[in-house]
Length: 136
Image 1: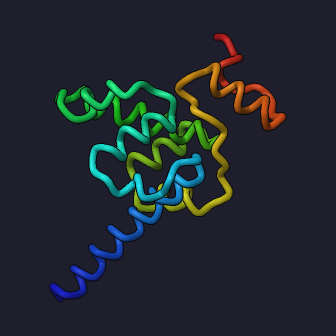
Image 2: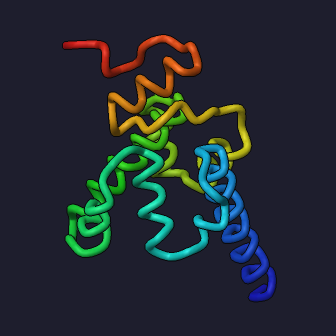
């Protein structure tokens, strides 16, 4: 029984590494960057368009790390054209939603955290406007 649990655990780890590797490649980064601890968070922040100093909050500030990681996951899903519902899936059921993001038909649409860069990327692709253009 213990052997089956170890095999299952290793399978989940492999699936998550492969998913992040593919997500990084879809975003134009080298896949190997996904397996380097701490550096993978720096690259993830670049993918979503946030500054590198956010890493301090993600690693060193209790409670704020949870908020910043949720915020980063939201920007990641938006960077791939997904909505807030997908963000909830990434947070609560990442073992399913990260592979869907990685191996599904989602395309990287630019760094959502930087409105100007996001719009420039979408214009380059000839796509329309997104959330930044809607005012409340």
